Image 1 (tube, rainbow, N blue to C red):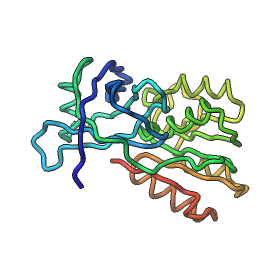
Image 2: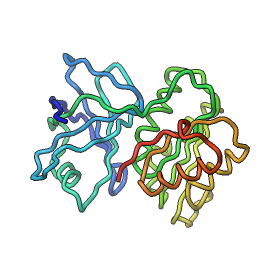
Image 3: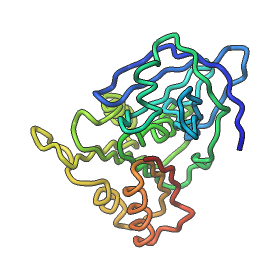
Image 4: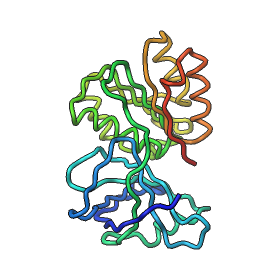
Length: 238
């Protein structure tokens, strides 16, 4: 499928850790721009590759200022992100597609929601959670189960911990598979966390994004718990 790409500008870059950057992008004011939490854009790159575009979920919640955020992890063996790391600066003009994707929260929210993610897979789920809270959408319990290897990998940690303090129905549960020096939180993998929370099999919907192996295993485990496939939404990346 051919996509039309248009110009947008990088207005800020945050080095979140040694392999993750947060890019803040401004679409020109004269161009109508809106998206729903959970959607993604494609970025077209001037690289020597059969496929020059890359898809990235929008990490920020919808707003009216034509600004959005992408949270991107470096793949040193790839061609796309090394180009970004080398060439993307504040002020750089980039080529964007229209907003795409159907990874969205159905409204009204009539069950608990569980967001399960690893790495930069938190991006669309962060967008969804913040959008629910920003718009004051009536909701039940919200759980963010976030798996990583090390403490430094916990993206948006301060923000999520603050949301947990501000909104009693929101629970942020980071879980680490490697880091054990001073870490007092949950250890291991995401699977035992959501299985523990939903051991009572109460009605819930699950939104999963992250490493393909995690995603596949989570879907299998949730179905084995008795949850219908329709209650399990996912977005994969590698």
